[in-house]
Length: 255
Image 1: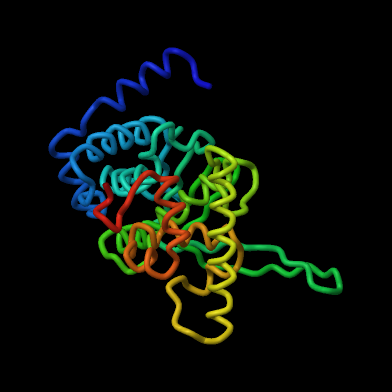
Image 2 (image 1 turned 180 degrees about the horizontal axis):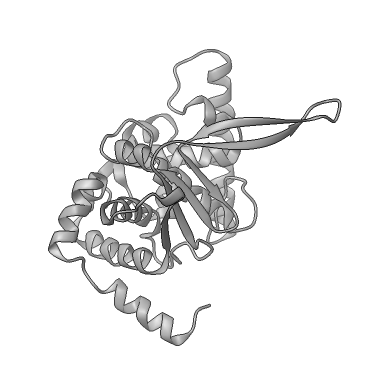
């Protein structure tokens, strides 16, 4: 819960449209948001205002985060919070931006108990401690074209997945019926994706989505916005539960 003062400020932000120049910049750096119908566009701008005001954007290693960068990230993250009762990433405090892909070291024990350090080059990462890390060159590129990849949507989906304390591919849902439908749809789709990979068939999800239910969920969110018609055709159950959860229907125009 937040205090009365913060609640009042948030309500004011939600009712404040973006200035014309800022709206034009948002549409330029994140054209996906231009597909929103007028009624949702106004709500979306209010959520963008909340994210810009309440979340800290910081550059890694002295990198300067510009207003366009903030708008591109907040504008796309806000798409996942348009539903009634959304709480605008309450556990998220900071968004760290690198100029390009960054290297992360992971310790991996082997069968003999020896620990090896593996390095991965990443375009994004979500931490349960309340941080999203993004590489700006990937954000910029993926924000402007529809190719099935969108690092902002992917990492902010992980933030929503982490809200219940478990990165298991299931965010907070409203009731038992929705949870049961979610689990049935995602489990069946996850297993089918892995079967298609094993049989070397053409797949809609990439290979990384087969790593875990959490990765499959975050990739599904990307596809829901990037290739909604294809997702609905191939994995209709997943599309339907995402549409009910996000209260959006991008296959019919995001309304």
